[in-house]
Length: 288
View 1: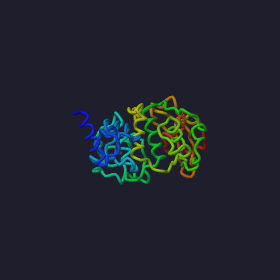
View 2 (view 1 turned 90 degrees about the vertical axis):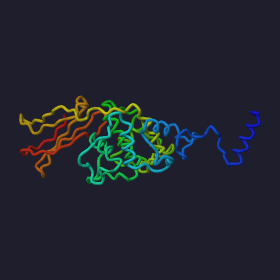
View 3 (view 1 turned 45 degrees about the horizontal axis):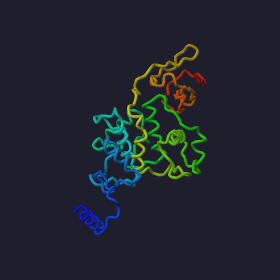
View 4 (view 1 turned 30 degrees about the vertical axis):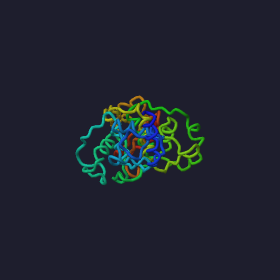
């Protein structure tokens, strides 16, 4: 009887046109994600943790480009400190408080994880791999003051032939992302920095940053006073998480009668803060 049932079941699968083994059936609700897909485990993990859901109840769209809003919303869901409750005026003119991603974008902007351009965020814009690396690296630095590079610069980029396509702002970020295996090339020789990140690739990325889920108190600061010849020129509140890891470069802008103080992390060479203040006409450039 059992043998007969097995034969009938096999016949039914052949007649109905099913050509994948029964083991490939997905436990997920999405009709476009199968267990045999290379991204299945990442999609399943993100779905279980509520980091990334589908476009609707049945569609995940794994090969669709990730938008900037989608990515920041997933990152907020990934974080252990994000809470749905940001209010007040939107930080970007193109982010409406009624949109589903509003709270996530506000959260990321508050932590200085994202920046806009001319007051806009471009939420529906396609997320490039370069921009994804910048967001992820910045987020990692908000979670830990000790973010390392697993490979040196030359070793990281040596296999790739399209490094000239990496925009200047993203070189350091892609170095971190690729050397740590957070983002991989699209092939053994291509990074495709200005290409888009698919939803399946994004789901995989979030499984690789599990160590970074709890952003530190970036707004917790200590006071820094800059003096020249006994005269205090400016006072700045610097992030306490970088207190022992801060490079400060100050220069004068005589045309604007102001000075600019720029703060870097020694380990990561990333600008943390900048400010213009009025001076009494002093001309100097110092590195401390």
